[in-house]
Each structure stands twice: as structure tokens, then as C-alpha cells.
Amino acid sequence: MSPQPQAADSLIWISGATEGIGLGLSRTVPYDRARIVNLSRRRHPELESHYLDLADHRSLTAVAEHFLRELAAFRGQRAIFIQNAHLRGMTGFAAETGAEDVARDIAANVAAPLLLGDAFLRAVVESGYRGEAGLVMMSSAAARSPYEGQSIYCAGKAALEMWVRVVRRENERRGRSHIWVTAVRPGFVDTGLTRHVAAMADRDYPVASTLRAQLVAGGQAMDADSAARQIWAALPARQSLLLFGEQVQVEQPGGG
Image 1 (cartoon, rainbow, N blue to C red):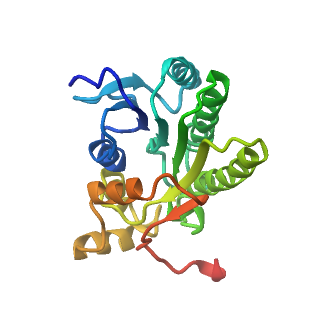
Image 2: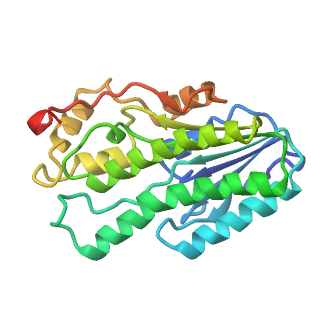
């Protein structure tokens, strides 16, 4: 593990920083003297890592305690948490997937991101940290598009974006001007997760064939580092949703 700055001016947490967009975000942090912490089940080969399992409530509690402990001791200029981690769920039609898998998917990909977002904000408030505090919740085009075979994923992202909109208003009402919160739809990015769902059977995930065609065509999907640089360039965010190119479009039955 490479050494982190001893007198960090920026404290950056990125969940799922070991692959995909999370890895890209960790490689392109634009701040000097930044301490970067990976929150993941897997350790990062170079970065400081703290264990996070989205499906384990005890892990979420431990991360919440970690946020509070670190922010109470932090004296730098900014603290940012990017909730990017996603547990690969059992993509498939409702009522056709095992009940235990559905429950795990909901816990990890709907409830956990909101619990982590709340934990970070709670830590900022309770620690008394008064520097710039930013929360980035990674969303998806699935927040607005009813992709068949991804009912839980779509519901989770839609809930996440509404949560962000409400929390921004609450922060304004409470006069927490040093805290900003935003959701990000990064568009069509070529990641392991993208290729994972693109390889699924069309019967279970009809948009998979569209994804495969766009990946084969080339030039339509952005690489993770380029997407990450765009995201960093847009922060701190002045709106509740940062929207980047959304390449995947499919017709929905019945007008969607």
C-alpha cells in the first residue's frame, strides 16, 4: 500500500474503488495532498482500504463509525464521499428470481446506498466538521428508464435521486451551506459491470442485445478514467443531478 499524505488537505472516500468507475475516480482525484480511502470487500493494491459489504448491515454500521471517527479528527479543507459500489444482483424478471436473492439485492442496492449516504452526512453534522463536505451518489439512466429485467436496480436508482433532491432541500432549510449533495448519471461507460449485464440472456434482460451492439460498434462507450475526469470537473455540484451522455435507448412496451 503506497503511503498517504500525512497532512492531508482532502479526505476522499470512494466505495468500490477497485474496479470500473470507482477505480477511475480513485486514479483521477484532482486534489493535491488527498487521502483516498477505498470502501470495498476487496482491498485496493495501493490505496488505504476499509471493509464494506453492502449486503451486511454490520459492515454498514462499521463504516458509519469510521466516517464519524475520521471526520472528528480531520482538519483539512474538504471531505467527500462517493457512493459508487454496487453488488451484482440477480438481474431477471420479477417473481422469476429466488426470494433470497431478491432480498439481498434490495438490501445491497436499494437500502445500503441510502444508509451510507445518511451515515456520511450524519458524521459531518455530529463531528462538527465545518470544511467543504460533499456527497456524490452514483445513479444511472435506469432511474428514468424502465429496463425489463432490472426492476430492483431501476427502483433503487430512482429512489436514490429523489433522496438527493429532498436532502438538498433539507440542508438548505437547516443552513448547512458547507454541505453539498448530488447524484450522477455517468452515461454509457465501458466497465466490467456493463460487460457483465451485456452478456446476459436477452430473455432475462432484453436490453442486453442493445448493450452488446454498442460495445461491438466501439466509440459509443466512454472509458472509466475519462468518465471520472468529467465527474471530478463538475464538482462541487450546484444541482441535484449531474447528467452525462446516456447512450443506451430502448423502446418500452406500452409507451413506458
